[in-house]
Every structure is written in structure tokens, then in C-alpha cells.
View 1 (cartoon, protein in one colour):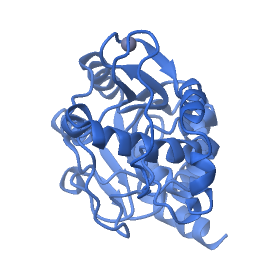
View 2 (cartoon, rainbow, N blue to C red):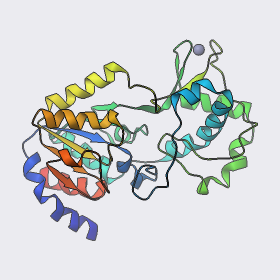
View 3 (cartoon, rainbow, N blue to C red):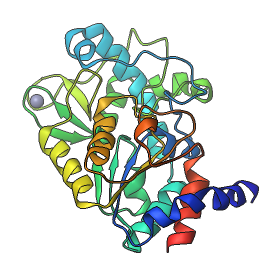
View 4 (cartoon, helix red, strand yellow):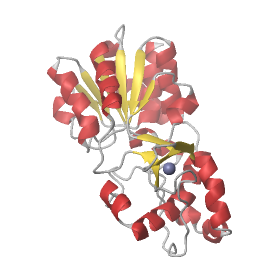
Length: 281
Ligand SMILES: [Zn+2]
């Protein structure tokens, strides 16, 4: 495979930095693109206005629109499978190189691949939380309720799904949503929200602390498939750099952490992480 041969050559500068070291990994949308989940901040992506927490909480019509799109989009994420990049990180964890993964993705593909120590920084697509009583239910259970409330809805847009934009938070773009009926919490009638951290919302403190501890416990920070656009990921690069830890970045296109990187590889994660796993395990 030509790209793998190129990747084997490209990782030669990185292998000595990682060999015999404990490596914490930070991943973003770029690692999931080869699984069919578009990276809406990637270099080839159209500009997109992400929904904010304030919009979701404050606007009932907006929530209806969001849930309609999410009801289609989440099924796409649900059907995706891990790729070579996810599997390479499992091999590196099994070999004692990778100590854990902090991921900005909500798709659970690291867990599906078999990674054991994963911090889902921005939440996970398969859970829903009630903003009033705090109960957490599975997205699968909610899907059954939404199907019952909106018979035929998914089928009515199924033909368009191939053309529908699917964003990493399972937010598919569909126009005809005005008749969609969202489900209230079945326990208290409160507003349900995917257990995903939106723009304008903070990552829970305990989760941030665990992620900083993972970075502090490692010798090196490896960033794979993130443009580090948001501070929630960039802060780990800044901390590692400040503490004198080498930072390796693998990403297609520029990142906000490039100035802090010891080595930056402008490359795809599937072939590059595969080449790293070959060299280090
Ligand atoms: Zn509730």
C-alpha cells in the first residue's frame, strides 16, 4: 500500500520520541473520518455553525429541529465501525506504549475497537440526559420512543440520507422537521439532551481533571486527528508543552497547537498510526 509505505517513512522522526515512553493520546474528528464520519472542521469541510447549548436550552423550535436531525444522524453513527487508526491505538495500549486516550469524539469508536482507558471528553452519542431530574437513558431507548411518536419519519427521509450531512455529533441536516415531535423525559416531563458537551457548555470538572492527570502521568502527548480548534483540547497540549513534555501532532492541515509541537506530521491518522504501531510493538 503506497500510503502506508509513505507513512512508514514519515514516522521515522517520531518513533525515537515514543519508544520506551508512556504516551497519552488526544484524538479528534480526524481519526473517525475513515470510518465515514465527516470532520466538519477539516480542511475540506464547508463552514458550519455549530449549535450552542444556549440555543438548545432556550428555544423549543430549535430543539425540535435538532432532535429531528439527530434522530436520523445518530443511526448513521450507530452503524459506523472503527478503522485502522483506532485499531493501531489498541495495539499500542496492549504493548504498554499508550497509557490512555482522551477523545473529543462522541462516537465511541475507541471503545468499539477495544481501547480500555478512554476519557470521552465531550460525552457520548449513545446516552441522553434529562436536564430537570438528571436521569440518564440510552439513546436506543429514546429512539424507540421517537419512532412511536413520529411513525414513518426516518423512512420518509431515508432516501435522502446518503446526501444528508452527518456531523460528528450525529446532527444530520434535514429541512422538513417542523412536524417532528420530540420526547419529554418519561419520569418528570423535563427536557432531554444528548449527553454531549455542546459549544457554550463546559466539560464536567471531574472529567477534565482525569484528562489532565492522564497527561501528567505520561512522558509524551500524541495528538491524532484534531485541529485543536477549541480550548477543551488545546489546553492539554499547552499543559504538556509547559511541563516540558514532547508533543507529537498527526493531523491533515494546520492545528492551533503546531507552534507547540515537537514534531508535526501533516498526514492521515489511519496509515500513520498503523505505521507507528508496526514500529513500536
Ligand atoms: Zn426527568
